[in-house]
Image 1 (spheres, one colour):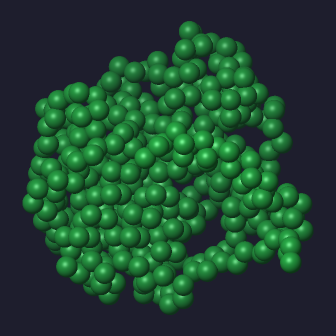
Image 2 (spheres, one colour):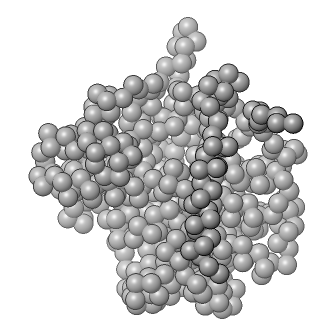
Image 3 (cartoon, helix red, strand yellow):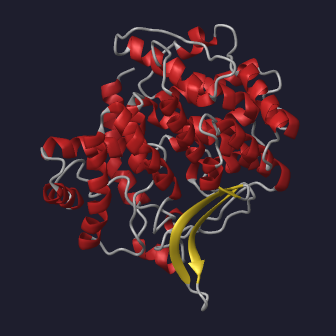
Length: 444
């Protein structure tokens, strides 16, 4: 295959695509089409109903006017902050919250114990799967590796195409249990073959939480502190679900509505989540902060920090995109509740890791970025840090490599995808097929 010839051919046709596929901005306004299914205020076009979760970012005043309010995230009728605050000091919440999202009810003690035992039973892969699939043709793009593994797992399932509810629930539970293994093993394969580092495959241990197993499988010595596991568990809870309208969850429902199988639906969601505008945002935050460190020597100098943030907004620094990553959200305006919860754990973790100065730098950026944005942009709603702002710092302090940031997101979000797949199978019986207005010119 002559790749140079193919690349040249594609490059030559780029201008043709730009000419024939560019749609005038005025046409979107003429036909009332909201790009990205969102208006200028970030409000999404209503496309479905769900009982899985709810996001609150506005309240109505006495005149019925929408007023921005501190953000809220609800899982099956429970505020996420309440679910986390109810956990005991040595209690992990991933499994309990997964049961709630999947089945719509808080588990009793016996139901939780049974669910945890089932997850333990599912924390295995087919014989030689790690060697024959994960370790074969490893990729730096761990999300692609996991997606390939998910689709390959269908080959080991005799009922892979059975979309009956009972079978779909079983498949979802199995994948929720297997995702940490797929993620960590895919990273180790890449790290060994591409970075020439040591290879080690630790098996998950029964009785451990998902967070504990993830850290143990990732680390050579399998050791972790109670605080590390607790913080990761909370991060997983916060990332489990975020309304039916987020890109990857909507993808899950679109694919499910066509009658496709569980493995295909989850693989499609993975392909959506890996985009830098969705699941890869925290990586951009970490990269942006590294760039800031290279240009500001005194991390307590708020003036120098703001000057560099202004350069980023003016497209003179970092990736020249004009964006301060981790600031603002498509839905939240006053605050992102997930960021508020995660931030409450960051200070303690920074003290355990001796990274207080790094945490202070993030706090300074958190306070100064909204000021800089307000001075340079026309803002339709408030600007506040989102969960991605601190999650990358948290993962870095936990020693989690950046290649695993988005896979870790997926390890949590597959619970939400599964809940929405189940709801789509039960309550909806129509294929999702939105309309597109053709603005094609008729030549003949």
